[in-house]
Image 1 (tube, rainbow, N blue to C red):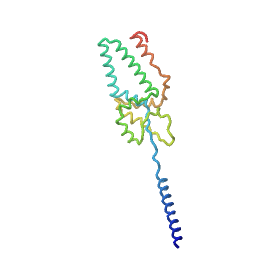
Image 2: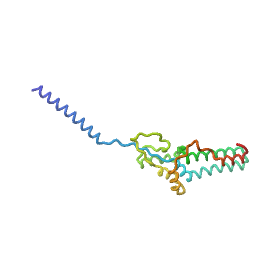
Image 3: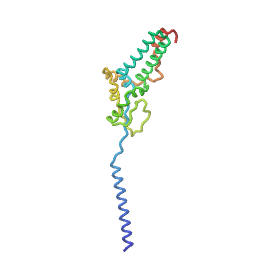
Image 4: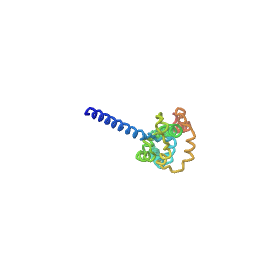
Length: 193
């Protein structure tokens, strides 16, 4: 009798463990894993929006003040240096607006606003769509371009131009060179390249 009770208790205990195991697995099977979502933006449109913002205007105002100061001081070396800087900067902006150059330096300006944007959009990361080289098919991408654009508070309606930019593929970076017109102007002003 004692041996039957031990066997019976062992069977009951085994069934209880099995039921616990199965019920745990059924609960886990019912609970879906949350999909990973990454917010992506078109850096070309974000750069264009920035170029229509107060932040850009302040940047250009500061540059123009530097040029004015150098010209008033008759510091031709500084004027030449600043001119080379603006040609380089213009080329960088062209890479960012017409190609797929990184807009990371611009997003630093609004980095304190990105966590709230990510939370609102339901994404765990925000990255340029041109810099997302691979994502697992289980990762969902969410376009947050318009939300990122709003962070820069463009001073004019950029929707039409943004639509045109969206329609175009980025120009390959190696096909973008410094504009000949700007280079010619530099050579005329300073003599030679």
